[in-house]
Length: 475
Image (cartoon, rainbow, N blue to C red; front, side, top):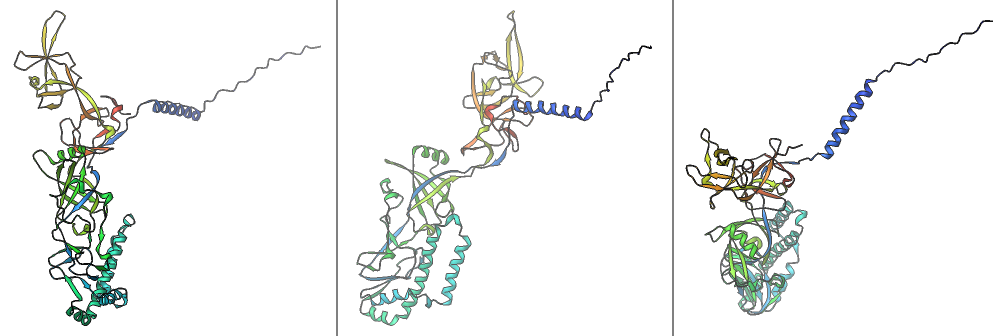
């Protein structure tokens, strides 16, 4: 019987086939993870591009209005009707109002003023024009103007109706006039009309005192609200000068700022004024008036008097945007320390126009040697005769020598300068800034252009100056 042979079974191993897609994916994934990790851990410098700009320095005040006002008083008692509205310009002998002692004619005139059907076509077109002018400039942001518009429209309608009624009652009026029971009051001089009194009519900029300023306790008497007057009672007042004044209280800090704006040796300056009532702007001549109780800013205007004739107190925004420059965020502003050396020690290299100083060094054997060190002069204080230089090539304790002299100076003082870090070259370079006087707010500062080691338009600067160091690269 034959023996059966044992067979050795060898397991077949498949060859490894490398999937190129998996390799590429793994490589990209590792690269992404490394890049993402570096992105999270690296410091990133936010960049701001410098641009031209200006900042309106503003402050809000309530000012007292003073004008040249003359009050006309009644010489008799009776019922009264007005034929002019507030802010109307009037000339000599123009009809202002009428006084009826008996009241019969006045009653008929008043009744006629309630009947709008008697208005002529021209009068209706005039009213339509008033409405059109108002709607063309009205906005939701100035809704309060509708009240002055309503008053102006009603006054215009009433004026036309009263004049028409007066003309139709000419016979009765002449008869009453002959018996001295009816009189027409006419203007005695040219000017602009106002129909209220408040006790400030005789106050001028020269006679004003701080005790007169009392916006919270202010009241005025509306003369047109009267249907009858007594002898000696105010009828109307006439403003005879287009110039007017606004007295604004200021504290000591504000006074100092305005004095700086005014300049040394000057007694006035020009300032832009925005009226909160209607958003209109005007320029005023400002001067500071000092009293025992405090200081006031006197604003003198030569226009817009008629627009605010009904107001005694006005809320205004004061500011000036005359100066402009480079606009930079305040977050970019930081400080850097510089070495202070006397200006007399600055010299030039023998073979170049580079500025620097002669540094004296002593070796271990006590032998002295002189070396010209090129330095960047960031700023010069002419009053104190010192220069601001970088600490990169010199340091406190170094000895320098005055050119063409044996005098020496040991560097020992430092000083700080405001500036920003310029990132144009991809790394941080400190640049000194010179803010425009009184031209900054909580977010931005306006700095001068064309300064030495300063900024230029479209320079790229670090947005957060406090987090950057000299020479740091932008990522």
